[in-house]
Amino acid sequence: MTGLDTTDAISFAFGLFNLLRLASYFPQMVAVASLDPTELCAFPGQNAFERFQGAPRWINKVTLRSIETFLEHDSIGYVDKVGPTPLLMIVSKPIDPPHNLDETGILC
Image 1 (spheres, rainbow, N blue to C red):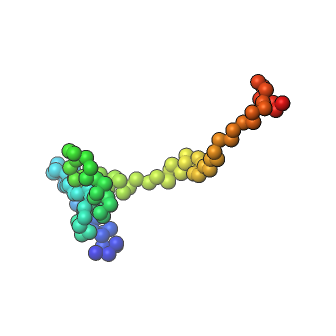
Image 2 (tube, one colour):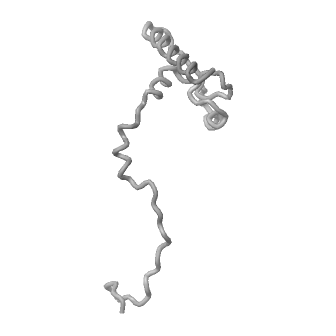
């Protein structure tokens, strides 16, 4: 499948299962992570699959509605809150003060 085919298939699935959900059918569940590249899941790939397997009672399932909400999230509204924060701080080693200071911190 190409990227466009996958996007069309996911959009179709979202629409279909939203109609079913509104008709009081059970929500459609898919895998959160999968090693199969053809399986519809939230996070494909080996790295994601291995990361999600650590919890003892965790079940590898999520609703299509949760994936749709995740994909619709737009974080651009938070950029102005992050922008003024320093993204890189270079901190030197602490400098030992000179030993010839008086009690006020002035060199003698």
